[in-house]
Length: 124
Image (cartoon, rainbow, N blue to C red; front, side, top):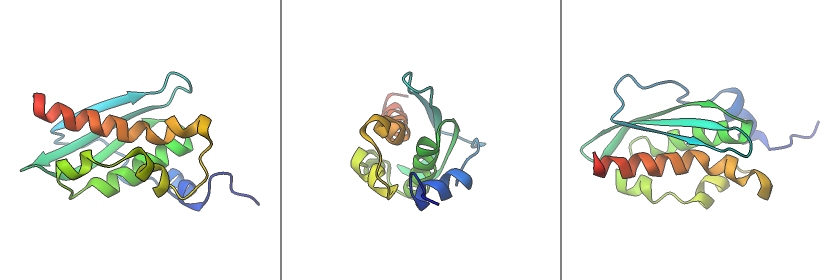
């Protein structure tokens, strides 16, 4: 059997990490892709410029869900400055799969929501 998106995407889609709402979110942002209907909400618990916890909820495809799962694992414990520097390419690379160009937005939607959330910390 051929895995269309690879083992990492399937593992994080089937068993997503941090897929929940945070009880004490400092900030949250939702991303939406009108082309495919993916919707993801990133929630962060931030204190002293450090992300103490990150979680997500989603109504999204396997790629977007896996990306959000990997991303929330990655940013927990990071400084907000370092988390804001995570590139689209880092996120796509972490999926360890060939993501077709037409599906790239699915993979980067969570990191875009993360960046918007972090930008909102400075303006709140």
